[in-house]
Image 1 (cartoon, rainbow, N blue to C red):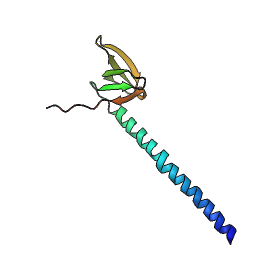
Image 2: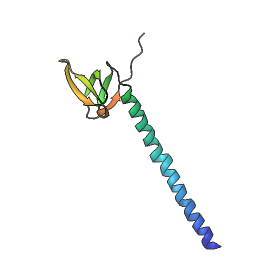
Image 3: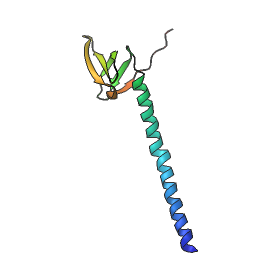
Length: 95
């Protein structure tokens, strides 16, 4: 009887460890990935973005899997893959 209880406790311990990892690590990471994917899918011309490499630019053109960004005052245009977009600056409310 004692070995059965130990086996059940061992199984419950592993289930609890997995549950902790799921709720503290896996679930938040999946939620963040989903938000990034949605953000990248909703990019629009005129959005101010920052790439994962630190380049700050304005979206000039949006295509299926990449965007064209305008850089600096000379308005140089450079294509980037959508996955390279790290953040989009929130739009300011017009008064």
